[in-house]
Amino acid sequence: MIAAVSTLKEYGYLRVDPCAWCGGPGGTIDHITARARGGTHSPDNLTGACAACNEAKGLWPLLVFMLLRAWVPVPPAGHNNGGR
Ligand SMILES: [Zn+2]
Image (tube, rainbow, N blue to C red; front, side, top):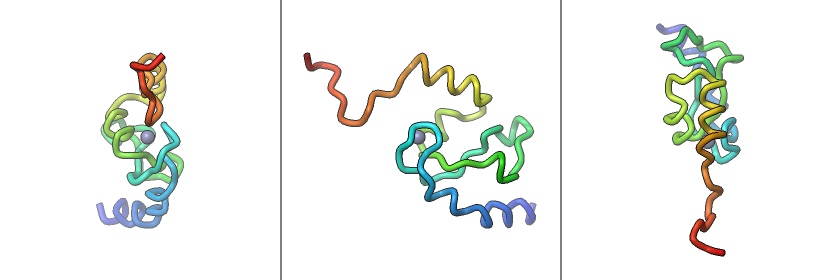
């Protein structure tokens, strides 16, 4: 839909926002409620996200994604699990 593409361009600045899910650099626009689940291109349904989080969130509802992140935490960059 032309109107939807226009809306995404209008809110393209979200691409430079930090990732809403991990706090790292963004780079993509994530639909908080996935379009396949009825989410829209409305600004209140869009947020900046890094590609890894955007991919991991996929079609999960937001609360399920947040719970999955809590259960399987992503180690901070540079974290060494083998050290004492
Ligand atoms: Zn992220």
